[in-house]
Image (cartoon, rainbow, N blue to C red; front, side, top):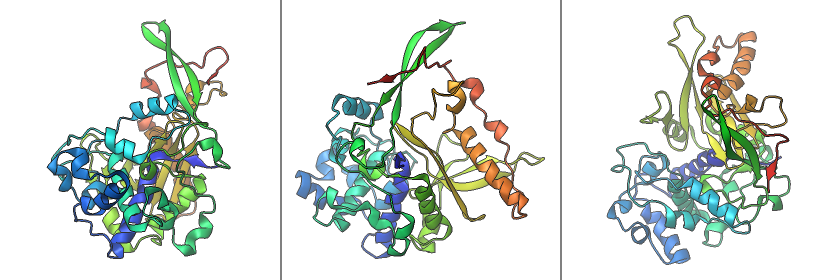
Amino acid sequence: MLIPVGSATKTWTAAAVLQLAEQGKVRLDDPLHRYVDPILLREHNTSLAELWKNPVIEKITVRQVLGHHSGVEDFDSEAVFNWTIAHPSGDYTPFMFLESVNKSFHCKPGSCVRYSGAGFILLGYLLAEELSVDGSWQGYDQRGVIPEELRHDFPRTHFPLLGKCSEIPGMVQQYAPVWKKVGTVDGEELEELGWHDVFNYSCLNGWTMGNAALPAIEQANFMYHLIVSKKIISPDMVELMTQTNPWADKMYMKYGLGLESDSFAMASSSGKERFHFFQHGGLDYGSAVAANVAVPELGFSLVVTVNSFTGMNCSLPDVNENQIVKYEWGLCNFLEPVLAVFEDEGRSRVRLNCKSYDKTSWIGSKATCGSGWHLDQ
């Protein structure tokens, strides 16, 4: 099945930009507008300066956007979801994201790490300007990042453009959560969980910031060939991609160029040692990647996908059982059995302390699927 992996698409987009940098077609420290303005003028009769009405936008570089330190704000996810539900036959296009995004800057470019999906849409326009077969954003083939000799490992990888998810053969059903307050128990709010089936809505998902849809094994192939075998971009570009800067609000997570690095506490006597890995999170309104990891030191990648926003499953006796699979607890428990195999084979002695990431004790609501869980149509 094809499962949308949301923001994990950003690593695909970054790899494509770095391929252009390798070829000398893009310089990472050039102002982004040099590559984006021509297609914006051709497609929409505008430029970044005219859209933002702020001269700072002409100073941000390709490298800064790749690393989320351009200061460009992110889009309003709730507003886009509400628009999509209100327009079941419509697509929230890349240019609509650029029109609606907050045009202020979170910080001076280069001075902070601020996650911005809108920035990766701008990178999509750069790629379309350089690689589109007809000069339009839709003429850019996102599968082009896959080298010809690796195509056999990606037979079903898809990057939806305009149209509904239901129109794509093999696309998984997707469920977005709908929480409804139904009262209180012991002073705590009680919420009933319903699911909104988003299968018959747009699958564009923010284009180059979030539209990849593929089986988990093919996403794992991508992470492996990118970070471990280094066959998608050169080792020098992988080194550049994996040089990371810390998020302001996350102690151990860092961001490179379209790629995150993170670490978990190891099950050692001191408790201070940490296991490091590369990853990129990803979630859509009705699906998510609970694990999207590459570990070059041990030579493996691991991807787990779910087809609901939370990972929850109302067919289970305990609806909360899967609620945290897309948080650190879930990722740690996906990695731990893989590391156990490496230990059994004598290839590694790394084991993780996953209990330290158990968040079940502070899940805010006592969610229930109600008497006979339902789908909101």
